[in-house]
Image (cartoon, rainbow, N blue to C red):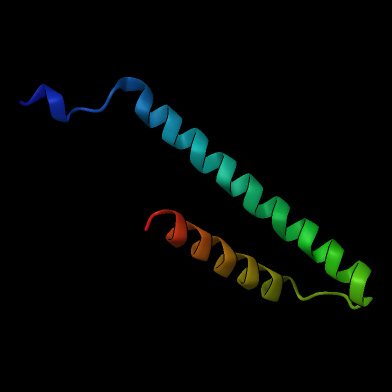
Length: 67
């Protein structure tokens, strides 16, 4: 077995922490976006629509970052 190919033991923990942070930011951005939308337009936003818009934004930023 090649020891260079094995990741350090903390790599998995760091990756999990990064994923948890991203998910929390994602959920928080949806909630803040919905509240801002309701404040500006006075319309109750559709949660599925807000989820879709934030998903597209996150995917776009991720692709831009990993180009």
